[in-house]
Structures are given as C-alpha cells and as structure tokens.
Image 1 (tube, rainbow, N blue to C red):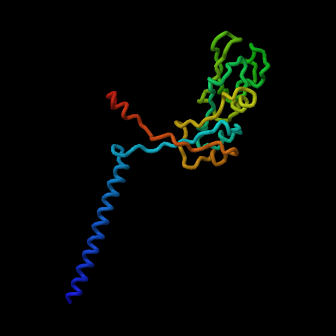
Image 2 (image 1 turned 90 degrees about the vertical axis):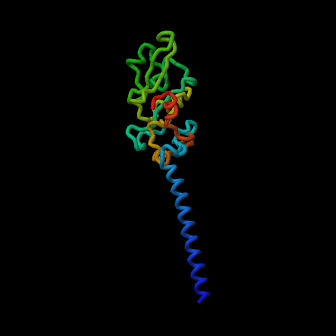
Length: 203
C-alpha cells in the first residue's frame, strides 16, 4: 500500500512538473511572439528587394508583360555619369544620322510610349542634351536600353523600382528571365522613418 502511495506521489509530481514546464515555455513563447507582433516593441524587419543585373540583362521585353503589376514595376533609367549627352541619342531616335534640326519633330522614336525625354543642357542645338525617362509613361519594355546597349554607352538600363515592387516571395519575372538576370537582394532592416519625425516633433 505504501509502495502504491509513493508511486502515485511520483506520478503526480512528474505530471505537475511537465505542466509547469509547458506553462513556462508557453509564457516565454507568448512574450517573444507578442513582442514581434507589437509594432512598438518589435525589432526591425528585414527588407529584401528584387533587382536586375544590367550586365546579364539583354532587354528581351519580358519584364513589361510578366510583372504582376500593370504597368510593370520595371522602369528604364539613364545613368548620367555614363551618358555622352549626344545631340542624337541611340536610345531616343532610331536614325542616328538624322539632321540635327529634325530629330525632335521628324525622328522615329525608339520608345513606343514616348517616355524618353530630351532637353538641352548647354550649347544650343549642337550642344549637350540630357536624356531622362518619364516613369509615368515607361512600361519597362527595354527598347531604349537595348538600343543604348547595342550602339551607345550602356547608360540606359532597366531597374525594378522598390517603391513599386510588391516584393513577392516568388517573382514571375525572375522565374521567367532567360538570362537569370534578376536576384533577390538584402537591403537591410525596414525603416518607417518614425524616429526622424519624432525627433522633429512631427508625430
């Protein structure tokens, strides 16, 4: 009888200990998860973005149609450090030998959406010109970047704008890119800039 009581006591103590451990672990998990769920106590979340490697990209045109966004989050840009500021730009006008006074009105534009803009920087019609991409018109077709890469200085290329990209876990463009030119890059912790506004008394 005494032996049975000792066994019942040990069994009771073992189960009580298991229950205590379970409660302790559950409480710890709740505190950890709760801190991450609470915006005021959670640490910074990691920010990953999809981006295009211009050295691999062939401007095939898939970025324009395969992005889940319409228009695409892919846009063309012109690196002014590489640009030659030509009077007639390969990424702007298809006929590079057109008369200088006819390129704006009579030249056949490379971009089907007229997203490549041209403005005089200095020197009049025979001077230096700055070429930019209007992202409100750009669809990411890559025609300007293709022409600039083939005939120009490679200053025009495609990027995925992080502010437009939905940061999908699986990017349709990346999975379909024939050159494997799109990778997911770590950009550091997310920042909502609340700290800046708090310092300035704006929150």
